[in-house]
Each structure stands twice: as C-alpha cells, then as structure tokens.
Length: 85
Image (cartoon, rainbow, N blue to C red; front, side):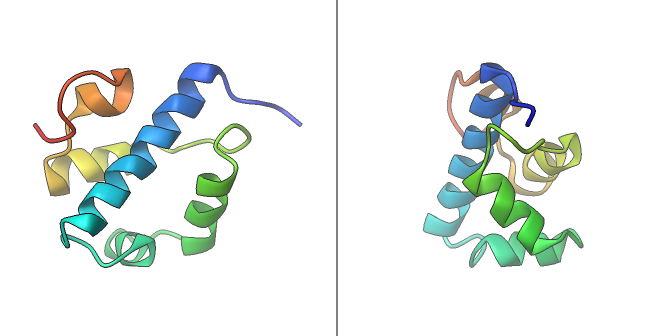
C-alpha cells in the first residue's frame, strides 16, 4: 500500500471541498453530475474522496474545475486565496 505525500493528500481534499462548494452554490447537483459532465467513472471519484491518502487525483480533474467553474488553481494546488478566481 503506497501512501500519497501530505501535499498530494491536501490537494485532493481541496478538490473535494471545491466540489462541495459547487454543490452548495447549486452549480452542480452532486459528484455524479461532475463525473457525467466529464465522462469520468463515478466510483473512482467516490473512492478517491474516501481514500485521498491512497488514491491519485488526476491533473485533468483539477483542470476541469478551473476551466469549467472558475475555481482558483492557487487555491487547489497551494491552499491559498479564495476558492474562486
């Protein structure tokens, strides 16, 4: 069992905080909506959310949030600033 670095785990957790933010703002209905929008496997995302220290977040997923929802890359990667650009 390989564990991610603390930095990678933190980025994954911020990714899901951004997803939760979008749900709260009603920009998406849920994780499944995000998965369907980008032709992703919902169960892979679900497992990633439950095991962020053991699963790898794909860079594409971060790009989808930044491009489609104006989520700040500085927030996602470094944890600084506002969640929205």
